[in-house]
Length: 140
Image 1 (tube, rainbow, N blue to C red):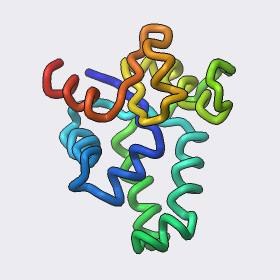
Image 2: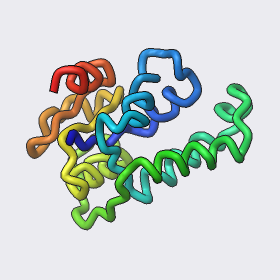
Image 3: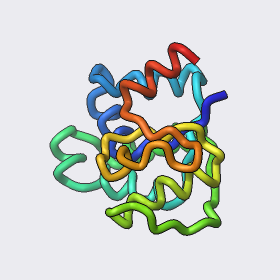
Image 4: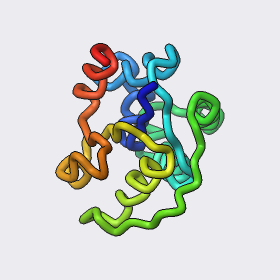
């Protein structure tokens, strides 16, 4: 099965616009088309971003909705504890994405962040945009 770390920005976009271009990322997760790889730092970042008033307020997300979403992701995903610390990304905060991917033996990192996309491939891990990942799920 395909294992993937999905960057928090993609997970946020999938939640707030499920009919949008990245919404199928969640549909495929529900259908167990891939295994989501998560780490505590990624979950903490996701929660922090979703709880920002500019996101929760603009998209009318209640605290319970946000917690339910994160709970769904943790139930469907595989929580890993990265032991390798990296410093390969221009933006140091992006290193946690790659650390989770290595710890979870992910085959993909899904992101719209150019600082990550330029590293493709990274130690055998494909770093791709959401559209390319969805194509890979349709044509394994």
